[in-house]
Image (cartoon, rainbow, N blue to C red; front, side, top):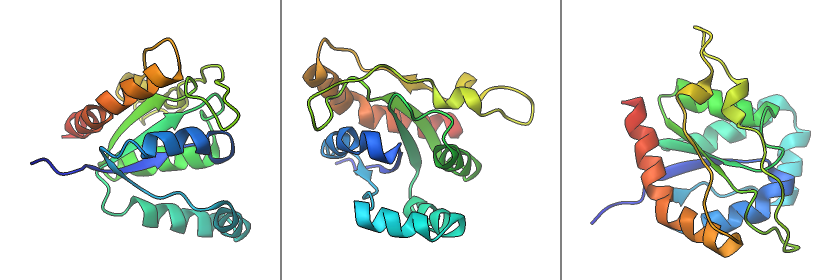
Length: 164
C-alpha cells in the first residue's frame, strides 16, 4: 500500500481557485486546504508577515510544492515566495498548467507563462532549467482533468526525486 504524498499547492487564488479545487478533489495526493475567501481577506489585510506565517504553516510537513499554473500565475509576489521557500527547504517543486480546465462559469483560458522562468539561482541559471512544468494533454477540460488525475502523483514523486 502506498501512502499519499503530502503536497503544498501554490496558485493564484482569485482566478484559479475553482480549477484548483478540481485538482484537489482528485485525491491521489494530500494537499493543503485553501483559506476560505473571508479568511484569506483577513490574512492578507494583516500584512506581509501574517501572509508569510500562514504560508509557512501550510508548508509544514509537505515534501513537494506543485504550482498550479493559470494564465496570470507567473511572477506574482506570493507565488514566487512559495516557490523559493519550497526550494530552499529542500522540497520537490513542479508545475502543472491548469488553464485548460473549466472555471465556475465553464470557461477555459489561455496558457500562462512558466513561473519558474522569472526565478534565477545565484549562478544565473533559471529555475525553469531544473524544475519541470507539465501541460496536460486532451481535447477538452475532462480529458485534461483525467490526465492530471493519472499523472499528478508521479509528478510529485519525480519532483521529490530530483531534489535528492
